[in-house]
Each structure stands twice: as C-alpha cells, then as structure tokens.
Image (tube, rainbow, N blue to C red; front, side, top):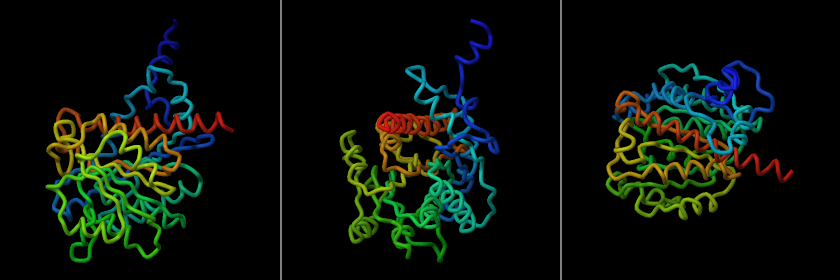
Length: 310
C-alpha cells in the first residue's frame, strides 16, 4: 500500500466536508455556526458558548467516517457543506433573524441545517427559520430545563425560546415536546404553562430507549430537533452553561441523536449550551462533536434507505 492509499484509508471529516464557499453537488446538509451567548448573559448564566461552534468543529473534523461499513457515511459527507459561522453583532434579536434567514434558505432548498450554538437562544432563531420559510414544525427539545421562561424586561434570553415559539403569532409551532427534565430545575409554573398549551414533557427518570423512539414517532412532521447538552450528566459534560447533576447518560443522549438523524420527519438539528470556557480536557467538546457525528450516522442510514426504495 503506497502513502497515498494510506492517507485515503485514514480520512477524517475535516478532509471530507466541503469548506465555506466550496461547491457541493446535490447538498443535503449544511453546518451553520451561531457564535452567540448574549441570551445566556441575559439569563444570568455562565457565558462562553459563543466559542462553541469553533470548538465543536475542531473536535468533529478529527473524527473518522467510521471503521465499520463507512460507505454510507462517506456518501453523505460528500453532500455536506460547512457554511461557516454567521457574522453576528451584539444585538441578540438581530442575530436570531440572521440565523432564521440561513435556516429558511436551507429548508426551502431541502437542505438539512445542523446548527452549532451558542446558547439556547439559538433555538428561537432556528425556529424563526421555519416562520420565514412559511413552514410549520413540531419542536423536540432534549434538555434538563423547559426553557419557557417569560422575557426579562421585554427581552428574550436563553431560557425563553420555546415560550416565544409557542406564542408566536405565525402558529408555526405545531407542538412542543421537552425530554430530560430535572425536577429540581423546573418550576411548577412552567409545567402548568406546558400543560395549559398541550405540550408534552418527560422527566429524566422516565427516559428509556423505547420512550425516546416513541417521542419521535408521536410528533407531527417536520420536526425541529434541539439538543441542549446540559441535559447530560456533568460528569460527562462539565463544559456547559448550566451543569446538571444526575443528568442523562451519554449512551441515551447519543441514541436520541442517532434516532433523530434516522427519522424522516426530522428536518433540522441544533446542539447548544456547550461552553468551552468551562470544559475539562475537551470532554464536552468531544461529546458535542460525537453528538453531531451520531446524528449524521442516523441521517446517512435514512438517506441510504430512501435511495434503496426509489
């Protein structure tokens, strides 16, 4: 085996994903960085998530397509483009509109956006992409918190995105499901808000692989999947805006990501609240990157199945 063959056998995602501005035939996926944590600051959280997109990419691009039957993943990666980080300001609402425009462009062209946040204010900009594209969505949020807090002095923040989506006058939010809730992190007032609006919620202790599958199957299409990494136990994800004791085990978290990728109804994905400033030896960066990689594995299986059926 010559040196070139050896290099071809050791490809990494950074070798395979198109860089910003590079042409891609029949793009299926776009990576979009949203380097913003103004919403976390407004919510009195630990800022630093604005640095997350770069850290996630660095860890993601070091991963291989997989040592076990990689062809399916290689076929998908040939149709993934990296759109880079959005050029943002200090104005959160303006930034969310910028993200909405990018997401809408993807949805209108049947490209699945993978958004690298950012605080969980990312999710409202993500949702507005559906509004701008004149599409409806059911939101599934994997999170230790419900994130349906009221605005603070009339301003949105990282704890308010799903209240904003639910109450948006467009009625683009067909429904909201949040899974992974911790009883000590959610108020009765917020549970009442969810119940009054017909939303679905699942406590961390309830979640099993069977329940995760059921959550996806019960939702209307298309699904906006949002993964707040603070749902994972702080032993595995210390670098987050709001660490969680007794959070989800990574196995179940990654299974939820895989099933999201595999599910035909899932039209968009984001991962949020990773905070590199408080990470320990890259633990959380690697888990965030593996979450995206696992979602792509599921998506590759989905697309491969569609092609075999056609």
